[in-house]
Every structure is written in C-alpha cells, then in structure tokens.
Image (cartoon, rainbow, N blue to C red; front, side):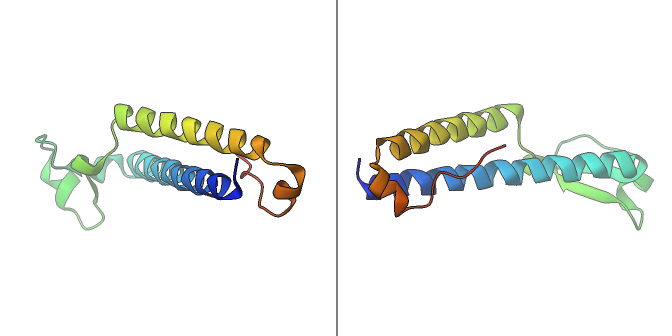
Length: 110
C-alpha cells in the first residue's frame, strides 16, 4: 500500500463523514423546528397544503420537501460511509510503521 493510496482513502472517508454530519444536522434542525413550531412549520414542494397561518405567519418555518433526504438516501450515504471507513482502516493497516508515523491516522469515529 502506498501512502498516496492511504491519503486518497482518508480523503474519501473525510468527505463521506462530512456528508453524514450534514445529513444529521439537517434532520436535527427540522426536528427542532417541528417540535418548537409545529403549528407554523411546513414542507414546501410536497403537494400537501396546510392552513394559511401555518405557512404565512411572520414566524413560520418552511423547508424544501424536495431537498429533504429520504430514508433510502440516508441509508445509501451510511453504506458509503461504512465502505469508506473500512477502506481507510485497511489502507492504514497495510502501511508500515514508518509510513504511519509520517501520516495522520484515520479519523476517530463516533
């Protein structure tokens, strides 16, 4: 295993890890909006209507339903994250100790 291959695998993992973080933040933000402003929250672009006060009041919160991640998209992203995690771990373990000493180790995951 070359250090270049490890660096590429690490960059790929970091990219997918950032994607997972972004998905998680979006889900939390929407969840908080629903919990805190349920009478004034709506998704746009879904074909479902709500009372005017839910959608048009001064403090209404709206999210674009066409941009909301589906469960399938979340699972596909998680699958790619796991594959990238496995690849970076394998690449790291294939390096010699001298090579590892010159590089950042794989990121710690939660």
